[in-house]
Image (tube, rainbow, N blue to C red):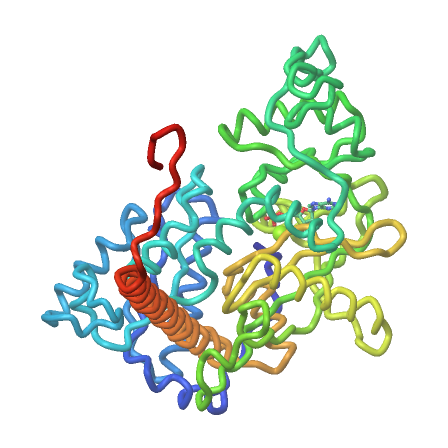
Length: 464
Ligand SMILES: Nc1ncnc2c1ncn2[C@@H]1O[C@H](COP(=O)(O)OP(=O)(O)O)[C@@H](O)[C@H]1O
Ligand SMILES: [Mg+2]
């Protein structure tokens, strides 16, 4: 999630040619998680995204239905919607005519703004997974990419393996006896050298100061108060507090990088309507590389020395806080900082590819004391509110909200077509192999029948 930019408002100019690419889309269901009056602003913020998408669709002339998904069970809501639309038979967009969605009008696409229920981040990919099973086109990333990018520990490991720099860090999911300074005897049992996975030994391996965050939250949840710790005692106390507040969730302990903060938004490339969808894939099985939007920087204005420079919970959600009013987005000049911005773009693209994102995404980066950029996290389906980072970067690139939404939808349709084609191809390959095997079997049988009866080897009077 990102910093709010109070000053910026997205232009609502009509995106040129947007509509023509979306001929197949008859209706967009804007699906979002339910919001109650008592919800945290990081949850209710989804309504601002619904507004932006609905406004863009109105401009594009595409019919829209807003769907607050009750209890995060989108399949039930779609079934109700299909029944209400009163279409019988298999004519839904799913080639299999899936019973649950058969009533939906052909050309229906789901705009997936459903986030996880509070305290259950692992459920985040469930909506995308259900839509994949229902064979419905939907916006943004697949269930697999959503799962991967929700888990900061998994993302870090993957990026590091791909050669993308991440801050030194690791996992902390249990604390030993406080008298033992956080060391837990089970580590020694686990690893034999006192440095087992998951224990406070990560604090020995990673140099201070540390920043501690819950591994699977976003929107800076858990990054409030004293998120940056300079001493082992402070880190252990913070870890104990976070493990209590976010039960069942491991923590990421990272070296706090003191340098500048950048973020890079990426948007699916416009699909080429005329070509076979399979041609759009690069050798790694992905479609054309996404468009990299202008690199943004979050500046920490007039921060007193010693105050951690982080875009934490206060900076994102508490308008009266110092952090909220003194964190400002700007777009560094390409001419002045070409090598740094090129490197940030390269890393963001590598992170997009490694995590298998689609549609739209945002990668958060931070420089170390030597000015080397590291990836902090990868946001699949980042916030699309008009005042959030993604739309600010799109505006900086000269893209209207309507153009952004039309590209995301066009990508959803193209991806759905590609995936379906791939399934058909796979089935054809299986059928072909099956036919060849069958011919082979018949052939072998006939040859055996033609051949003279083999003389069986005999050992000790017993035939084998
Ligand atoms: N290793 C780090 N070094 C410095 N700042 C960090 C580090 N990790 C997180 N932060 C700060 O905390 C903010 C939120 O962390 P991030 O990993 O992006 O999680 P979230 O999903 O909550 O946005 C970042 O934008 C950055 O300001
Ligand atoms: Mg972030």
